[in-house]
Structures are given as C-alpha cells and as structure tokens.
Amino acid sequence: MPPIVERRDIEAAGRALEGRLRATPLVEDGETGLWLKCEQEQITGSFKLRGAFHRLLQLTEAERQRGVIAASAGNHGQGVAYAARALGIEARIVVPAAAVPRKVDAIRALGAQVAFAEGGYAVAEAEGHRLAESLGAVWISPYNDPAVIAGQGTLGLEIEADWGPTLGQGGAQVFVPVGGGGLAAGIGVALAAWRPPVRVIGVLPAHSAYLHAYFHHGSMDAVREEPTLADGLAGAIETDSITLELARSAVDDMILVSEEEIRGALRWACRRDLVIEPSAAVALAGALRGDAPHRLAVLSGGNVDPSLWEDIRRHAQA
Image 1 (cartoon, rainbow, N blue to C red):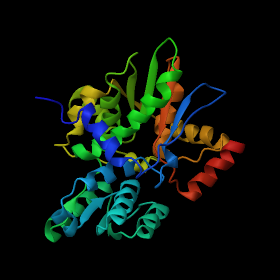
Image 2 (tube, rainbow, N blue to C red; image 1 turned 180 degrees about the vertical axis):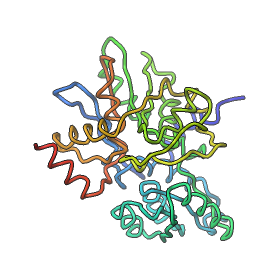
Image 3 (tube, rainbow, N blue to C red; image 1 turned 90 degrees about the vertical axis):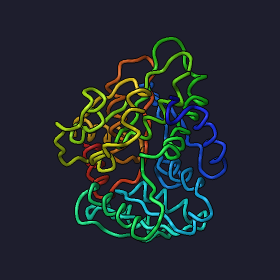
Image 4 (spheres, one colour; image 1 turned 45 degrees about the vertical axis):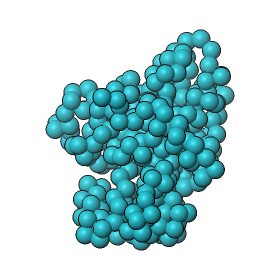
C-alpha cells in the first residue's frame, strides 16, 4: 500500500497554493550558523495557513455551501478563517476557553464565527466534531487529513529549494515543532529523497509528549500532560490519526525539550529581534541542542501573547 501522503501530493499542493500565500524567508544566524525558516512571516503568522488553504481548495461546490468548522488554539483557526474568506465559505471555529485572546481576535477579524468550549483543546475538538455533524458542515482537522498534511509539506519544498544549495559536507538536521504531527510528517515526506540525506527531527514540549511516546514506544497511554508555554502544541492526538504512522515512517527522530529550554529559545530569538511564539521556540530549542554541522529550525509561528513577550523581553535584556 502506498503512503497516505507522497511527495507528488505535496508538489501538487505547492502548485495549487502558488500565489495564495507567501514563500517565507530562510535566514542564517551569523553568530551560531543556525538556519531559520521564518514561517512566522506567513500571512496569518503561522504555517497552519498552508494546510488549511489546501484543504479548503479540495472542497466541492456543494461542500463549500455547507460551510466549514474547525477547532483550534488559534493558528489553525486563523488559517481556516483566512482561506474561507478568500474562497467565500462560511467558517466557524471552536476554541478552548483559555485560548490566547490575540489569536481569537484575529480569527474574528478574518470573518469567522467563534464558539468557546469550556475546557482544553480536546474538549474544543469534541465540540467541533459535534457541531459539524449537527450543522452538516465540513470538519477541517488541523492535522488528521491528507490534504492538510500535503499543504504543510510545501514548507519542506521551500527548505529544499533555498537551503539545499548552501549545504557543504557533513550532516544536516531540520528541527520541526510537533503537536498533531502534520507539519513534521509533511516535511519528512517532502525531504525523504533529498540527497545528501537530511535528518528531520520532531521536537515536542516534555509537558505534552504524545507523539514522542507513540514514535518511541507505540503507545500514548502513559503520557501525563502538564501545562506548557507551547499551547499550540498541547493536547492529545486522535487515536486514529493518520499522522501517527506517517510521522513514524517519515521523521527520523522525536525529542523533548523542557519549559526552561523553551523560555531560553524565546529569549534567544528576542535578542535577535525575532518575534516567535512558544510553539516555534520548541523547534528552536531542539536546534540549539543539535549536533550536526548544518542545522535548521522551523519557526512555525509568531502569534505570541503580548504579555508573555514583554516578560521574555525583560529577561532577554537582563
């Protein structure tokens, strides 16, 4: 049986999305030699736009008329809202009660309706599924969908085109933040045939280590979730998610970073005038710990809570 998402699917997504979003910059940090894929400069401030837009482009006219529903801590919701507005589709986003207000305001500003769920992301996702079924709307998963994964994988095509020509001898590592696993799986598939080979490493907050547990042990039963700065990566993964096995086959390793490492990566970015959110700092923390001659961190988003960023700025300047 062929993989659920193949390189040709990602290439097709790239063609479909051409002109609809930004090809984000790739920059090198002069002090450390670390390369940074600056997806925080995407239109909605996050990579989530890629998968959401590609998924909505696959809808039939009848499905577009029914509208779409998604659950999100913020970034996926903004991506769905932006794409829905561009395509003339009604969108409703279910968000956890504790979602970052800036992200919720951005979803509303893009024209989507917002419904709050009293609980964490898992509760919001369950409520989103219930609403989609009761209203007859199309459910747009943030990760458990081949079209979404193919859209996220277009980021890997840009990395290949922009970073590949700069590489010399020695190993190369690409560090990708992991929540549901769609971005890491998509990038892993996109870069699987790259020569010389590059290792794609998924990075998770230790306080929400679901896919790390599945990758290394084949089960998520022992995971005990704790609050994490990286709220965009938090929450359990659907047990039937296609990303579980796809990430296992397409990603070379999964590692964990601590809350202090996440804060340290945020301060590192702040000192370089890079505004990133904690989910992006997770990948950066992994890359700063990396050991290959060539390392790249995917800065997945920049929609950070202003009060948190002010706290980071004070500590970065201390």
